[in-house]
Amino acid sequence: MPNNFIGPRILSLDIETSPVVAHAWGLFKQTVAINQIIEHPRTMCFAAKWMHEKKVRFYSEFEHGPEVMFHAAHGLLSEADVVMHYNGDRFDLPRLNSEFLIAGLSPPAPYQSIDLLKVMRKNFGFPSNKLAYITDRLGLESKVKHSGHDLWIRCLASDPKAWAEMGRYNRRDVTLLEDLYEKVRPWIKNHPHVGLYTGEPDCCPNCGGVDLMRQGYALTSMGRFQRYQCRGCGTWSRSSRRESGVGNTQIK
Ligand SMILES: [Zn+2]
Image (cartoon, rainbow, N blue to C red):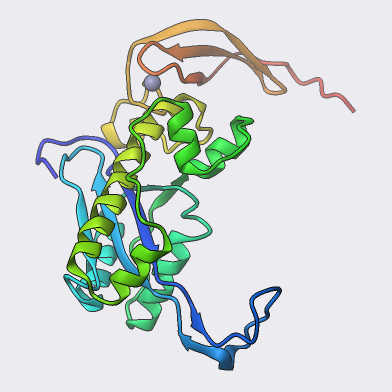
């Protein structure tokens, strides 16, 4: 992290997990009982990147071992103001929390979360919200192609070449997350207000830019508020100062 960095520390994060290994009695419509589990699923590796750094971090059970890997994840989350991910609210973050609990770690310091999958679902109507599909449609650099399930099997067998491939795949995903974030940032509602971190309250809440165009008014039940659009990123915002109120009359 550069010493002169001002702003929210945004961490993009992506984990990869191992499959459940279990005894099954058939191939279709199987219910696997807990006592049929041979190996529980676990976090095999993760990649993370601070938005204001070039370096992409990659930790794996193969290279670092679980203890170092989970302490690193815990440390990064604790340093972050905002953690950005794709379906991480449902998948990556609870999975990591389970690993922390198993490892006897306390909760990481609180952070805010931006789940880009939720942003896609809420704002757009793409036929698929898979990250590979979305990034392709938006003309972003494509995901690293991998050899599918076979890659996971080879990683579980500690194949160094497979781990190198997994590392490339996992690292690319966090840089893609940043690219996607730049594209959809003006669509993100309730983005953590960048001005709270930069100390510049009259800025674009989503990017911190100060070049704001006056663009009409927001009329609410509380009154009239100046509305702005950021020239930098296109985010709409409005002043928190009321220009004219609605008096004391209330609709009953
Ligand atoms: Zn902006």
